[in-house]
Image (cartoon, rainbow, N blue to C red; front, side, top):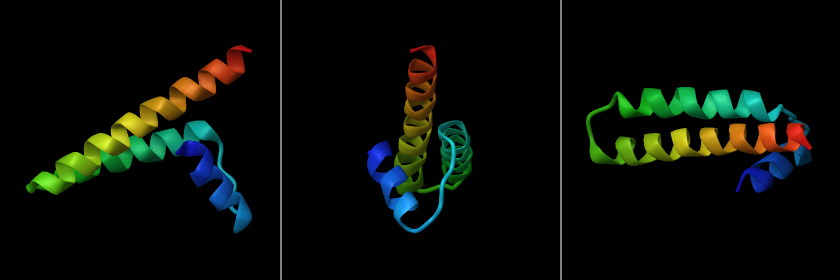
Length: 64
């Protein structure tokens, strides 16, 4: 999914590094969790997991 988002952003002329996208996803995930309903929890957890996956992908590519 990260590749699709990155390719979509490139098509409209927006580029971001993976660590920045990961940090944004984690921050928004934490902010969404602050709300009370169940849906924000689900969305927040998704953002946090996606952010962690961005970081893992970034560090694995950097290691190679």
